[in-house]
Image 1 (tube, rainbow, N blue to C red):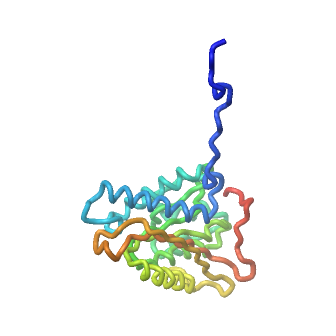
Image 2 (cartoon, rainbow, N blue to C red):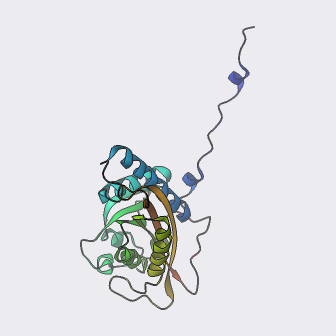
Image 3 (tube, one colour):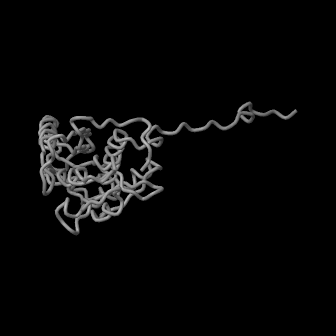
Amino acid sequence: MPAFDTMDRMPPREKMPDIATLRADRSAIRKSILEVLKQTADSYALHGDPNTDLRDAPEYLINVNLAQGLAAAFPTLRFRLEHPASTYEHSARQTVDARAAVGKDAARFDVVLLNRQTGVPRYIIEVKRGIKIIGDAERIISIAALDSGRRRWRHGYLVTIIRRTESDMLDKVAQLVSAIGALRATKNAQLPDHQHVVVKHDFMRIGEARQDPDSKAIFGVVFQVSLVDRKAPDIEQAGDSLE
């Protein structure tokens, strides 16, 4: 009989799915955002302008990479870049005026993650470079505060690239978390007393600063901005159904 390797008789081993691909929960999205930022920073350092870093790169580079990376990581999602706020009026379960809420008729969000099957918006992602981000947090809260009947619209992500020393970074992120969490207003209205803003965040050192590299680095930061009721805190359930 001809010799053969015992491996020839064994069925191919199935690759275990990545946990992030199973369900697009909010904590998994936060972590994936940082992974995409790190990959983008590495690619920019290798192929981009050698005198700059990702903090200097055009914002649309980050937007496109985030949108494509997250849609690849989470098969239940697709994306739309420069998503008009007006489309929220068509997807709400109750009548809302999203353009008035955001304060501008032609308002657009950098990236919106959509349900792949229905096309309904799920999460806003606003992208910035630097620490002037409070206005973008207010835009996310403005949509979250709509009485839309869409529970997932009460959560969004604010992403920024910051150039700082390690010690300064810890202090600055803490200040930003506190400032966002203290917000009591949308773009054009006060929040009701029974609602408040909750901020979860993660950050990662994603590269070296081209300017002053001996002391500063490039950090990616993601803030998950949520509007919750004081009476009944919003808790993400493992069995959340798709909208």
